[in-house]
Image (tube, rainbow, N blue to C red; front, side, top):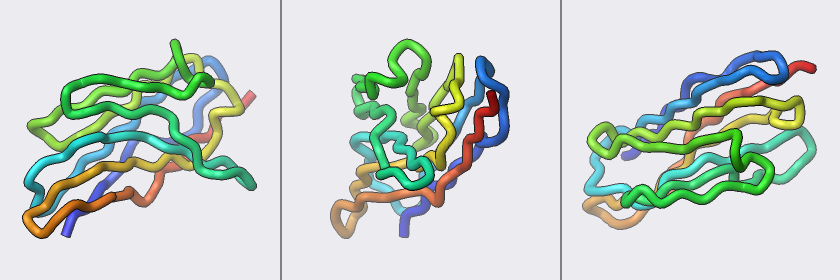
Length: 119
């Protein structure tokens, strides 16, 4: 069984910063892509950023230049540094990982962490 546990969400004023963390645990052979998604009220879940196990990154246009995704492979952990936050960044942020276990591949999700940006 694989678990993703997120932390770091909270309430911040517009222009502020937050850092999200997500640690994967369990019987893991390797992890390919790790990413962050978000879902605002009454909106569909959307990709925020993704990082490959080689360190290549991709970002949604709405967060480019403000958010930075990174990972620590030895810790099976992915981070999202969010700067210059805007009220429209308010959402539940979910961690995602493409995990290889000894029983096969797994698309793992965290439980979500709420980020609220006040104007």
